[in-house]
Amino acid sequence: MSRRTRPRAHLRASRTPAHAIPARAPGRHELGQSFLVDRRAIADVVALVGATRGPILEIGPGDGALTLPIARLGRPLRGLEADARRAARLDARTPPAVRIEHADALAHRFDARPHVVVSNLPFHITTALLRRLLAAPGWTDAVLIAQWEVARRRAGVGGGSQLTAQAAPWFAFELGRRIPRSAFRPMPQVDAGLFAVRRRERPLVEAADRRAYETLVARSFSAPGAGLARILPAAGALPAQAAKRWLRERGHPPHALPRDLSPDDWAALWHRHREVR
Image 1 (cartoon, helix red, strand yellow):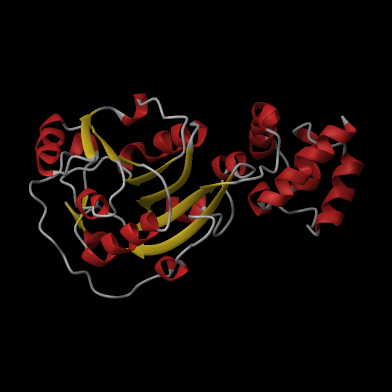
Image 2 (image 1 turned 90 degrees about the horizontal axis):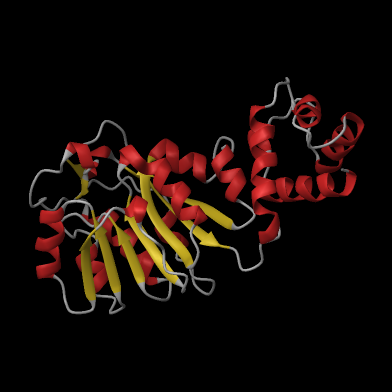
Protein backbone atom coordinates (compact mmCIF):
# COMPACT_ATOMS: atom_id res chain seq x y z
CA MET A 1 0.00 0.00 0.00
CA SER A 2 1.14 3.59 0.22
CA ARG A 3 4.51 3.99 1.85
CA ARG A 4 2.98 6.74 3.97
CA THR A 5 -0.43 5.38 4.91
CA ARG A 6 -1.61 1.78 5.01
CA PRO A 7 -5.14 1.28 6.36
CA ARG A 8 -4.59 -2.02 8.15
CA ALA A 9 -8.09 -1.89 9.57
CA HIS A 10 -9.29 -2.85 6.11
CA LEU A 11 -6.98 -5.87 6.06
CA ARG A 12 -8.69 -7.58 8.97
CA ALA A 13 -11.06 -10.45 8.34
CA SER A 14 -14.75 -9.59 8.40
CA ARG A 15 -17.64 -11.80 9.51
CA THR A 16 -20.27 -9.19 8.56
CA PRO A 17 -23.03 -10.57 6.30
CA ALA A 18 -22.81 -9.46 2.70
CA HIS A 19 -24.84 -6.50 1.45
CA ALA A 20 -25.21 -7.30 -2.19
CA ILE A 21 -25.67 -5.15 -5.27
CA PRO A 22 -27.13 -6.72 -8.41
CA ALA A 23 -24.82 -7.81 -11.22
CA ARG A 24 -25.99 -6.32 -14.54
CA ALA A 25 -25.69 -9.64 -16.42
CA PRO A 26 -24.32 -13.13 -15.76
CA GLY A 27 -20.56 -13.56 -16.08
CA ARG A 28 -19.10 -15.58 -18.92
CA HIS A 29 -17.63 -18.86 -17.70
CA GLU A 30 -14.96 -19.01 -20.43
CA LEU A 31 -13.64 -15.61 -19.27
CA GLY A 32 -13.61 -16.58 -15.60
CA GLN A 33 -16.11 -13.84 -14.81
CA SER A 34 -17.48 -13.85 -11.27
CA PHE A 35 -18.47 -10.35 -10.23
CA LEU A 36 -18.06 -8.91 -6.75
CA VAL A 37 -21.43 -7.71 -5.41
CA ASP A 38 -20.70 -7.30 -1.69
CA ARG A 39 -20.77 -3.57 -0.90
CA ARG A 40 -18.52 -3.87 2.15
CA ALA A 41 -15.89 -5.88 0.30
CA ILE A 42 -16.01 -3.28 -2.47
CA ALA A 43 -15.54 -0.52 0.11
CA ASP A 44 -12.51 -2.34 1.53
CA VAL A 45 -10.89 -2.53 -1.90
CA VAL A 46 -11.61 1.13 -2.65
CA ALA A 47 -10.16 2.20 0.72
CA LEU A 48 -6.92 0.32 0.03
CA VAL A 49 -6.64 1.82 -3.44
CA GLY A 50 -7.40 5.25 -1.96
CA ALA A 51 -4.39 4.91 0.36
CA THR A 52 -2.06 4.70 -2.65
CA ARG A 53 -0.98 7.36 -5.11
CA GLY A 54 -0.83 7.67 -8.85
CA PRO A 55 -2.85 6.54 -11.87
CA ILE A 56 -4.82 3.30 -11.56
CA LEU A 57 -5.00 0.28 -13.85
CA GLU A 58 -7.91 -2.12 -13.29
CA ILE A 59 -7.72 -5.59 -14.77
CA GLY A 60 -11.09 -7.15 -15.55
CA PRO A 61 -13.53 -4.38 -14.54
CA GLY A 62 -16.61 -6.31 -15.74
CA ASP A 63 -19.72 -4.23 -15.05
CA GLY A 64 -17.84 -1.65 -12.98
CA ALA A 65 -18.59 -2.72 -9.39
CA LEU A 66 -15.08 -1.58 -8.43
CA THR A 67 -14.50 0.81 -11.34
CA LEU A 68 -17.27 3.29 -10.56
CA PRO A 69 -16.44 3.82 -6.86
CA ILE A 70 -12.70 3.90 -7.62
CA ALA A 71 -13.39 6.56 -10.27
CA ARG A 72 -14.72 8.79 -7.48
CA LEU A 73 -11.16 9.02 -6.15
CA GLY A 74 -10.60 11.47 -8.99
CA ARG A 75 -7.44 9.82 -10.37
CA PRO A 76 -6.78 8.69 -13.95
CA LEU A 77 -8.20 5.19 -14.32
CA ARG A 78 -7.75 2.71 -17.15
CA GLY A 79 -9.56 -0.63 -17.34
CA LEU A 80 -8.69 -3.71 -19.39
CA GLU A 81 -11.75 -5.87 -20.08
CA ALA A 82 -11.68 -9.12 -22.10
CA ASP A 83 -15.43 -8.99 -22.84
CA ALA A 84 -15.90 -6.55 -25.74
CA ARG A 85 -19.58 -5.83 -25.02
CA ARG A 86 -18.98 -5.19 -21.34
CA ALA A 87 -15.99 -2.97 -22.13
CA ALA A 88 -18.07 -0.78 -24.47
CA ARG A 89 -21.00 -0.62 -22.08
CA LEU A 90 -18.87 0.31 -19.07
CA ASP A 91 -16.84 2.87 -21.02
CA ALA A 92 -20.07 4.67 -21.89
CA ARG A 93 -21.01 4.88 -18.19
CA THR A 94 -17.72 6.24 -16.83
CA PRO A 95 -16.48 9.85 -16.50
CA PRO A 96 -13.88 11.35 -18.90
CA ALA A 97 -10.92 10.49 -16.64
CA VAL A 98 -11.76 6.79 -17.00
CA ARG A 99 -10.95 4.75 -20.12
CA ILE A 100 -12.18 1.18 -20.51
CA GLU A 101 -10.55 -0.87 -23.27
CA HIS A 102 -11.33 -4.24 -24.79
CA ALA A 103 -7.98 -5.93 -24.13
CA ASP A 104 -6.31 -9.14 -23.03
CA ALA A 105 -4.48 -8.47 -19.76
CA LEU A 106 -2.09 -11.34 -20.47
CA ALA A 107 -0.91 -9.49 -23.57
CA HIS A 108 -0.91 -6.03 -21.96
CA ARG A 109 2.33 -4.07 -22.00
CA PHE A 110 2.55 -2.44 -18.59
CA ASP A 111 3.48 1.24 -18.34
CA ALA A 112 6.97 1.80 -16.95
CA ARG A 113 5.72 4.88 -15.09
CA PRO A 114 4.45 4.53 -11.50
CA HIS A 115 0.85 3.37 -11.21
CA VAL A 116 -1.42 1.20 -9.07
CA VAL A 117 -3.03 -2.07 -10.14
CA VAL A 118 -6.38 -3.33 -8.86
CA SER A 119 -8.15 -6.51 -9.91
CA ASN A 120 -10.72 -9.10 -9.02
CA LEU A 121 -8.50 -11.65 -10.74
CA PRO A 122 -10.26 -14.13 -13.04
CA PHE A 123 -9.86 -17.39 -11.15
CA HIS A 124 -8.91 -19.51 -14.18
CA ILE A 125 -5.86 -17.37 -15.10
CA THR A 126 -4.88 -16.08 -11.66
CA THR A 127 -1.38 -17.58 -11.62
CA ALA A 128 -0.60 -16.52 -15.18
CA LEU A 129 -1.71 -12.95 -14.45
CA LEU A 130 0.26 -12.84 -11.21
CA ARG A 131 3.40 -14.03 -12.96
CA ARG A 132 2.97 -11.38 -15.64
CA LEU A 133 2.27 -8.70 -13.06
CA LEU A 134 5.30 -9.57 -10.92
CA ALA A 135 7.53 -9.42 -13.98
CA ALA A 136 6.13 -6.04 -15.09
CA PRO A 137 7.77 -2.65 -14.47
CA GLY A 138 6.29 0.55 -13.17
CA TRP A 139 3.48 -0.30 -10.79
CA THR A 140 4.07 0.44 -7.12
CA ASP A 141 1.09 -1.20 -5.41
CA ALA A 142 -1.46 -3.86 -6.29
CA VAL A 143 -4.78 -4.53 -4.56
CA LEU A 144 -5.99 -7.96 -5.64
CA ILE A 145 -8.74 -10.52 -5.07
CA ALA A 146 -8.03 -14.20 -5.70
CA GLN A 147 -9.12 -17.57 -4.38
CA TRP A 148 -8.62 -17.66 -0.61
CA GLU A 149 -5.94 -20.35 -0.64
CA VAL A 150 -4.09 -18.54 -3.43
CA ALA A 151 -4.17 -15.29 -1.43
CA ARG A 152 -2.87 -17.15 1.65
CA ARG A 153 -0.02 -18.74 -0.28
CA ARG A 154 0.99 -15.45 -1.86
CA ALA A 155 1.23 -13.90 1.62
CA GLY A 156 3.20 -16.88 2.95
CA VAL A 157 0.50 -17.95 5.42
CA GLY A 158 0.97 -21.65 6.16
CA GLY A 159 4.20 -21.69 4.18
CA GLY A 160 5.52 -19.77 1.20
CA SER A 161 5.18 -20.84 -2.43
CA GLN A 162 7.85 -20.86 -5.12
CA LEU A 163 6.21 -17.93 -6.91
CA THR A 164 6.16 -15.80 -3.76
CA ALA A 165 9.74 -16.74 -2.84
CA GLN A 166 10.93 -15.80 -6.31
CA ALA A 167 9.24 -12.39 -6.07
CA ALA A 168 9.89 -11.66 -2.37
CA PRO A 169 13.17 -9.70 -2.75
CA TRP A 170 11.32 -7.13 -4.87
CA PHE A 171 7.76 -7.26 -3.50
CA ALA A 172 6.10 -7.41 -0.08
CA PHE A 173 2.83 -9.37 0.22
CA GLU A 174 0.11 -8.81 2.82
CA LEU A 175 -2.99 -10.93 3.34
CA GLY A 176 -6.30 -9.15 3.85
CA ARG A 177 -9.82 -10.29 4.59
CA ARG A 178 -11.53 -13.45 3.52
CA ILE A 179 -14.42 -12.78 1.14
CA PRO A 180 -17.16 -15.45 1.15
CA ARG A 181 -18.16 -16.97 -2.16
CA SER A 182 -21.66 -15.58 -1.60
CA ALA A 183 -20.19 -12.13 -2.30
CA PHE A 184 -19.88 -12.97 -6.02
CA ARG A 185 -22.27 -13.52 -8.93
CA PRO A 186 -22.19 -16.11 -10.31
CA MET A 187 -21.15 -17.76 -7.05
CA PRO A 188 -17.79 -19.58 -7.34
CA GLN A 189 -17.11 -22.89 -5.61
CA VAL A 190 -14.63 -21.42 -3.10
CA ASP A 191 -14.17 -18.30 -0.99
CA ALA A 192 -11.89 -15.50 -2.15
CA GLY A 193 -9.33 -13.37 -0.38
CA LEU A 194 -8.16 -9.78 -0.56
CA PHE A 195 -4.40 -9.27 -0.58
CA ALA A 196 -1.97 -6.48 -1.31
CA VAL A 197 1.43 -6.37 -3.01
CA ARG A 198 3.88 -3.50 -2.64
CA ARG A 199 7.04 -3.01 -4.65
CA ARG A 200 9.96 -2.61 -2.26
CA GLU A 201 11.79 0.72 -2.32
CA ARG A 202 15.03 -1.13 -1.58
CA PRO A 203 15.13 -4.63 -3.09
CA LEU A 204 16.72 -7.40 -1.03
CA VAL A 205 18.54 -8.70 -4.12
CA GLU A 206 20.02 -6.67 -6.98
CA ALA A 207 17.84 -6.46 -10.08
CA ALA A 208 20.72 -7.72 -12.23
CA ASP A 209 20.69 -10.98 -10.24
CA ARG A 210 16.96 -11.59 -10.53
CA ARG A 211 16.99 -14.34 -13.15
CA ALA A 212 19.79 -16.26 -11.44
CA TYR A 213 18.09 -15.84 -8.07
CA GLU A 214 14.75 -17.12 -9.43
CA THR A 215 16.54 -20.14 -10.88
CA LEU A 216 18.12 -20.91 -7.50
CA VAL A 217 14.71 -20.72 -5.81
CA ALA A 218 13.15 -23.01 -8.43
CA ARG A 219 15.93 -25.57 -7.97
CA SER A 220 15.50 -25.42 -4.19
CA PHE A 221 11.77 -26.13 -4.43
CA SER A 222 12.26 -29.04 -6.83
CA ALA A 223 15.44 -30.66 -5.44
CA PRO A 224 15.11 -33.99 -3.59
CA GLY A 225 15.67 -34.32 0.14
CA ALA A 226 13.88 -34.63 3.47
CA GLY A 227 14.92 -31.15 4.59
CA LEU A 228 16.95 -28.12 3.62
CA ALA A 229 20.15 -29.64 4.98
CA ARG A 230 19.95 -32.04 2.03
CA ILE A 231 17.89 -29.96 -0.38
CA LEU A 232 20.28 -27.00 -0.54
CA PRO A 233 23.33 -29.09 -1.56
CA ALA A 234 21.18 -31.03 -4.07
CA ALA A 235 19.98 -27.71 -5.56
CA GLY A 236 23.52 -26.39 -5.84
CA ALA A 237 22.75 -23.60 -3.41
CA LEU A 238 25.35 -24.44 -0.75
CA PRO A 239 27.75 -27.30 0.00
CA ALA A 240 26.55 -29.70 2.71
CA GLN A 241 28.53 -28.27 5.63
CA ALA A 242 27.87 -24.69 4.57
CA ALA A 243 24.13 -25.48 4.32
CA LYS A 244 24.04 -26.87 7.88
CA ARG A 245 25.94 -23.86 9.18
CA TRP A 246 23.68 -21.41 7.37
CA LEU A 247 20.56 -23.11 8.73
CA ARG A 248 21.91 -22.85 12.29
CA GLU A 249 22.69 -19.17 11.78
CA ARG A 250 19.18 -18.50 10.50
CA GLY A 251 17.53 -20.51 13.29
CA HIS A 252 16.11 -23.28 11.08
CA PRO A 253 16.32 -27.02 11.84
CA PRO A 254 17.88 -29.34 9.23
CA HIS A 255 14.44 -30.73 8.35
CA ALA A 256 12.98 -27.30 7.49
CA LEU A 257 11.57 -27.00 3.98
CA PRO A 258 11.77 -24.24 1.33
CA ARG A 259 8.25 -23.13 2.23
CA ASP A 260 9.51 -22.29 5.76
CA LEU A 261 11.96 -19.61 4.60
CA SER A 262 11.06 -15.93 4.90
CA PRO A 263 11.91 -13.27 2.30
CA ASP A 264 14.91 -12.24 4.41
CA ASP A 265 16.02 -15.90 4.54
CA TRP A 266 15.88 -16.24 0.77
CA ALA A 267 17.88 -13.04 0.28
CA ALA A 268 20.45 -14.21 2.85
CA LEU A 269 20.68 -17.59 1.12
CA TRP A 270 21.32 -15.90 -2.20
CA HIS A 271 24.09 -13.74 -0.77
CA ARG A 272 25.72 -16.74 0.96
CA HIS A 273 25.44 -18.72 -2.28
CA ARG A 274 27.28 -15.95 -4.09
CA GLU A 275 30.01 -15.93 -1.43
CA VAL A 276 30.78 -19.66 -1.47
CA ARG A 277 30.35 -20.59 -5.11
